[in-house]
Image (cartoon, rainbow, N blue to C red; front, side, top):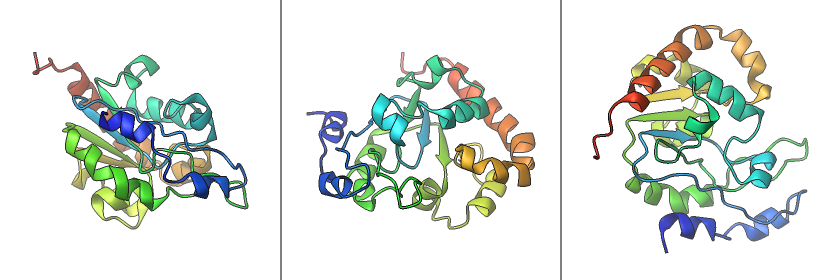
Length: 197
Protein backbone atom coordinates (compact mmCIF):
# COMPACT_ATOMS: atom_id res chain seq x y z
CA UNK A 1 0.00 0.00 0.00
CA UNK A 2 1.39 3.40 -0.98
CA UNK A 3 1.83 6.19 1.56
CA UNK A 4 -1.09 8.12 0.06
CA UNK A 5 -3.29 5.02 0.35
CA UNK A 6 -2.20 4.56 3.98
CA UNK A 7 -3.05 8.18 4.80
CA UNK A 8 -6.38 7.93 2.99
CA UNK A 9 -7.26 4.86 5.06
CA UNK A 10 -6.24 6.47 8.39
CA UNK A 11 -8.91 6.46 11.10
CA UNK A 12 -6.76 7.35 14.14
CA UNK A 13 -8.94 10.35 15.02
CA UNK A 14 -12.32 8.65 14.59
CA UNK A 15 -13.27 8.96 18.29
CA UNK A 16 -11.98 12.55 18.49
CA UNK A 17 -14.09 13.62 15.49
CA UNK A 18 -17.15 11.74 16.72
CA UNK A 19 -16.99 13.84 19.92
CA UNK A 20 -17.15 17.17 18.02
CA UNK A 21 -20.35 19.09 17.24
CA UNK A 22 -20.28 17.79 13.67
CA UNK A 23 -19.78 14.14 14.75
CA UNK A 24 -18.12 13.48 11.40
CA UNK A 25 -16.03 10.55 10.23
CA UNK A 26 -12.38 10.97 9.19
CA UNK A 27 -11.85 11.78 5.51
CA UNK A 28 -8.15 12.39 4.92
CA UNK A 29 -7.41 14.63 1.94
CA UNK A 30 -3.97 13.57 0.70
CA UNK A 31 -2.97 15.57 -2.39
CA UNK A 32 0.65 15.06 -3.38
CA UNK A 33 3.07 13.21 -5.62
CA UNK A 34 6.81 12.96 -4.98
CA UNK A 35 7.88 14.92 -8.09
CA UNK A 36 5.94 18.11 -7.33
CA UNK A 37 8.04 21.27 -7.59
CA UNK A 38 5.93 23.32 -5.15
CA UNK A 39 4.68 22.33 -1.70
CA UNK A 40 1.78 24.11 -0.01
CA UNK A 41 1.64 23.44 3.72
CA UNK A 42 -1.74 24.37 5.15
CA UNK A 43 -3.44 23.90 8.49
CA UNK A 44 -6.20 21.31 8.04
CA UNK A 45 -9.18 20.90 5.73
CA UNK A 46 -12.31 22.90 6.50
CA UNK A 47 -15.83 21.51 6.22
CA UNK A 48 -16.14 22.39 2.52
CA UNK A 49 -12.89 20.61 1.75
CA UNK A 50 -14.04 17.65 3.86
CA UNK A 51 -17.18 17.40 1.74
CA UNK A 52 -15.43 18.03 -1.60
CA UNK A 53 -12.39 15.80 -0.99
CA UNK A 54 -10.15 18.45 -2.62
CA UNK A 55 -7.85 20.84 -0.72
CA UNK A 56 -8.68 24.55 -0.71
CA UNK A 57 -12.01 23.92 -2.48
CA UNK A 58 -13.44 27.06 -0.87
CA UNK A 59 -13.07 30.85 -0.75
CA UNK A 60 -9.74 30.47 1.04
CA UNK A 61 -8.53 28.52 -1.96
CA UNK A 62 -9.72 31.26 -4.30
CA UNK A 63 -7.69 33.82 -2.36
CA UNK A 64 -4.62 31.58 -2.17
CA UNK A 65 -4.72 30.91 -5.93
CA UNK A 66 -4.99 34.67 -6.48
CA UNK A 67 -1.94 35.30 -4.28
CA UNK A 68 -0.06 32.64 -6.23
CA UNK A 69 -1.22 33.88 -9.63
CA UNK A 70 -2.23 30.38 -10.78
CA UNK A 71 -5.45 28.95 -12.15
CA UNK A 72 -7.30 25.98 -10.67
CA UNK A 73 -5.94 23.58 -13.29
CA UNK A 74 -2.34 24.39 -12.32
CA UNK A 75 -3.14 24.45 -8.61
CA UNK A 76 -4.65 20.95 -8.65
CA UNK A 77 -1.95 19.38 -10.85
CA UNK A 78 -0.34 17.04 -8.31
CA UNK A 79 2.70 16.57 -10.54
CA UNK A 80 3.43 20.29 -10.11
CA UNK A 81 1.96 21.29 -6.74
CA UNK A 82 1.71 19.14 -3.61
CA UNK A 83 -0.75 20.21 -0.92
CA UNK A 84 0.11 18.73 2.47
CA UNK A 85 -1.64 20.24 5.50
CA UNK A 86 -0.53 19.78 9.08
CA UNK A 87 -3.54 17.46 9.49
CA UNK A 88 -5.23 15.65 6.63
CA UNK A 89 -8.77 15.64 8.06
CA UNK A 90 -11.30 18.31 9.00
CA UNK A 91 -10.88 18.56 12.82
CA UNK A 92 -14.40 19.87 13.56
CA UNK A 93 -15.66 23.12 15.10
CA UNK A 94 -15.15 24.69 18.51
CA UNK A 95 -17.99 26.19 20.59
CA UNK A 96 -17.85 29.46 18.59
CA UNK A 97 -18.12 27.68 15.24
CA UNK A 98 -14.45 28.14 14.29
CA UNK A 99 -12.33 25.29 12.99
CA UNK A 100 -10.51 23.35 15.69
CA UNK A 101 -6.71 23.25 15.39
CA UNK A 102 -5.11 20.33 13.58
CA UNK A 103 -4.70 17.34 15.91
CA UNK A 104 -0.95 16.91 16.65
CA UNK A 105 -1.39 13.14 16.25
CA UNK A 106 -1.68 13.58 12.49
CA UNK A 107 1.65 15.35 12.09
CA UNK A 108 3.32 12.98 14.55
CA UNK A 109 2.08 10.00 12.52
CA UNK A 110 2.47 11.17 8.93
CA UNK A 111 4.39 14.43 8.53
CA UNK A 112 7.99 13.22 8.38
CA UNK A 113 7.08 10.24 6.20
CA UNK A 114 5.47 12.58 3.66
CA UNK A 115 8.32 15.10 3.79
CA UNK A 116 10.82 12.29 3.16
CA UNK A 117 9.10 11.63 -0.18
CA UNK A 118 9.08 15.26 -1.32
CA UNK A 119 11.86 17.50 -2.62
CA UNK A 120 10.07 20.73 -3.58
CA UNK A 121 11.88 23.75 -4.93
CA UNK A 122 9.47 26.11 -3.23
CA UNK A 123 7.45 25.74 0.00
CA UNK A 124 4.47 27.92 0.93
CA UNK A 125 3.88 27.88 4.70
CA UNK A 126 0.24 28.88 5.06
CA UNK A 127 -0.66 29.90 8.61
CA UNK A 128 0.86 29.64 12.06
CA UNK A 129 0.66 25.85 12.44
CA UNK A 130 2.73 25.27 9.28
CA UNK A 131 5.23 27.95 10.26
CA UNK A 132 5.62 26.52 13.75
CA UNK A 133 6.42 23.01 12.48
CA UNK A 134 8.70 24.03 9.61
CA UNK A 135 10.40 27.14 11.02
CA UNK A 136 9.87 26.92 14.77
CA UNK A 137 8.09 30.28 14.45
CA UNK A 138 5.66 31.49 17.13
CA UNK A 139 4.48 34.87 15.83
CA UNK A 140 2.75 34.82 12.44
CA UNK A 141 2.98 38.54 11.69
CA UNK A 142 6.69 38.72 12.53
CA UNK A 143 7.38 35.57 10.54
CA UNK A 144 5.50 36.77 7.46
CA UNK A 145 7.05 40.24 7.77
CA UNK A 146 10.48 38.57 7.69
CA UNK A 147 9.62 36.67 4.50
CA UNK A 148 12.83 37.80 2.78
CA UNK A 149 14.79 35.75 5.34
CA UNK A 150 13.18 32.60 3.94
CA UNK A 151 12.79 33.45 0.23
CA UNK A 152 13.24 32.25 -2.41
CA UNK A 153 12.93 28.67 -1.10
CA UNK A 154 10.07 29.28 1.33
CA UNK A 155 7.35 31.88 1.73
CA UNK A 156 5.47 32.18 5.04
CA UNK A 157 1.90 33.34 4.40
CA UNK A 158 -1.10 34.18 6.55
CA UNK A 159 -4.03 31.85 6.16
CA UNK A 160 -6.13 33.06 3.20
CA UNK A 161 -9.36 32.77 5.20
CA UNK A 162 -11.86 35.65 5.05
CA UNK A 163 -11.25 35.91 8.81
CA UNK A 164 -7.85 37.39 7.98
CA UNK A 165 -9.18 40.25 5.86
CA UNK A 166 -8.54 42.70 8.71
CA UNK A 167 -4.94 41.40 9.00
CA UNK A 168 -4.43 42.06 5.29
CA UNK A 169 -5.73 45.63 5.68
CA UNK A 170 -3.36 46.25 8.61
CA UNK A 171 -0.41 44.84 6.67
CA UNK A 172 -0.62 46.25 3.13
CA UNK A 173 3.04 45.36 2.51
CA UNK A 174 1.97 41.72 2.19
CA UNK A 175 0.09 42.17 -1.09
CA UNK A 176 2.32 45.03 -2.27
CA UNK A 177 5.71 43.36 -1.68
CA UNK A 178 5.48 39.64 -0.85
CA UNK A 179 2.76 38.59 -3.31
CA UNK A 180 4.52 39.90 -6.46
CA UNK A 181 7.75 38.14 -5.46
CA UNK A 182 5.86 34.93 -4.69
CA UNK A 183 4.22 35.02 -8.12
CA UNK A 184 7.58 35.62 -9.80
CA UNK A 185 9.23 32.68 -8.02
CA UNK A 186 6.27 30.40 -8.75
CA UNK A 187 6.27 31.32 -12.43
CA UNK A 188 9.99 30.62 -12.76
CA UNK A 189 9.67 27.24 -11.04
CA UNK A 190 6.48 26.09 -12.73
CA UNK A 191 7.63 27.21 -16.19
CA UNK A 192 11.12 25.71 -15.95
CA UNK A 193 11.84 22.67 -18.17
CA UNK A 194 11.25 19.31 -16.53
CA UNK A 195 14.68 18.02 -15.53
CA UNK A 196 13.35 14.52 -14.87
CA UNK A 197 12.97 13.78 -18.61
